[in-house]
Length: 181
Image (cartoon, rainbow, N blue to C red; front, side, top):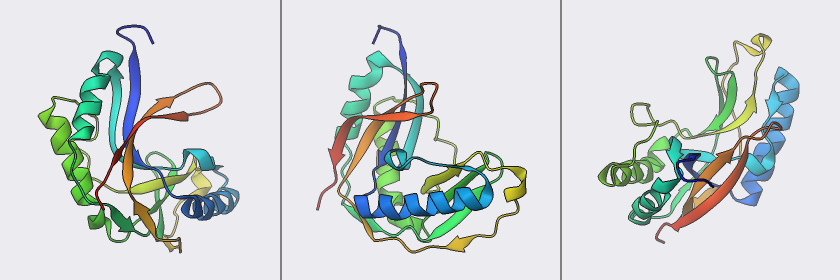
């Protein structure tokens, strides 16, 4: 990467295989029902903090900040389906998002202490996994639904780069950071 080039970065949790399998199944079914585009299984993730475009030379500072996060492993269940009309997304979320709040807040505090700017600072934290994109108008209104997924134990979190070739977003994990057991 050339000096001064930017990278589109975010921190995320990658779901375990059984959760990916269940969410992928839901995404396919809901895309068929709504006429939207299902998220590819290999790109399913839960965003902890979206950093947006960052200069490549800031990467060591961002990694150093993430290495300072001290938070326990977290177990949670994705159990509801919702939509956001403004960005035409259907997503799977958590009825009890407070399970992820300590990790989210620890990450944001550490980023601030290392002078890392990020796009999510003013946004409320809504832990979710995007299942379907590009929902057409006919998909609205959409009634919230309950779903059943396996329990998800996050043992680490990742710094990820979003690479946008013409075929759609691909994600490259730059580094993972452990959570304590």
